[in-house]
Image 1 (cartoon, rainbow, N blue to C red):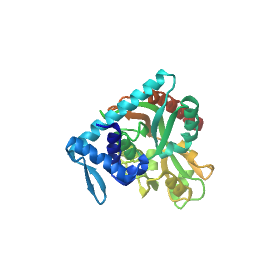
Image 2: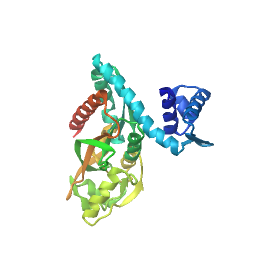
Image 3: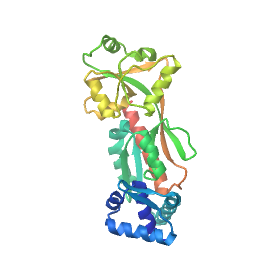
Image 4: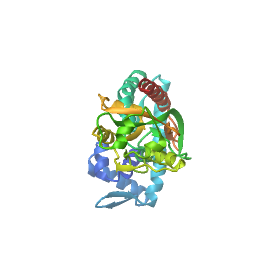
Amino acid sequence: MDLKQLEYFVRVAEMGSFTRASIALDVAQPALSRQIRLLEVELRQNLLTRNGRGAVPTEAGKLLLEHGRGILHQVALTREELGAARGALAGKVSIGLPPSLSKLITVPLAKAFADQLPKAQLSLTEGFSVLMHEGLRMGNLDLAVLYNPEQSTDLEMSTLHEDTLSLISPAGESATAKSRRARSKEVMSLADVAQLPLILPSRPNAFRILIEGEMMSIGKRPNVILEVDGLNAILNLVKEGMGHAVLPGYTLSNFDDATPFTVRSIHSPAIKSQLMLVWSSRRPTTLTQKKAMEVVTAVLQKAIQQHD
């Protein structure tokens, strides 16, 4: 079995398309198809079901995909450890970041990476938790920063920071009397927050589930007037006086000018959120990835402290 053929198959199976895989691999599509067909001939089994929408692994293909990822990862691990023996941490590290942190730490993380891992390649992806989990499972991400991830035998994790969610409101005149009363208070009880018009992400967003769970514990439900799956979109709607958001206060770092917003603490109870660094337990962690974990942890904790 040729490693290049295996790499081609894994990429097509993960991306579900010969076209997308050929672009990602920078290989002509006919050559890509030919190599995978040779692999199928060698194994005497069809590995992919080709249709008008792309390519889907057969049962045999799913089995090879699972083993293939491990084989390719072991090859990469060996290369990195041999490189480390020469004193160089190299290889690619793919890291997923939530939108609330992306702007806050992207630049300092890239600078720290260039300084501490100059021979490694950094790949950053912004997305919500569901996409991050899938990326870790599929092997597209090596590490991800997630809010309140569920415990899983497929994942390992370490705590980066405990956030306290805040009420983020428009600073100017707003449309409702409740909103005007909200602006007059420096802190608000969760029961009072439940009465305000809220703009929240849709389920299964980690913040949405956490907010609903805390309100349920005091016999309340959030008054959701808009569901928006985009951090900047939520904050722009708040800025225009359309409602309020419940997010970590540092999310306002996404805006160069935070004066259109008012941030208030929430109490009785406070809404606590765990920010975790997560990686797959099904693949060995390379030396480069271990160093990347240290870099991410240090950069993130410093950035949040500066904005608390």
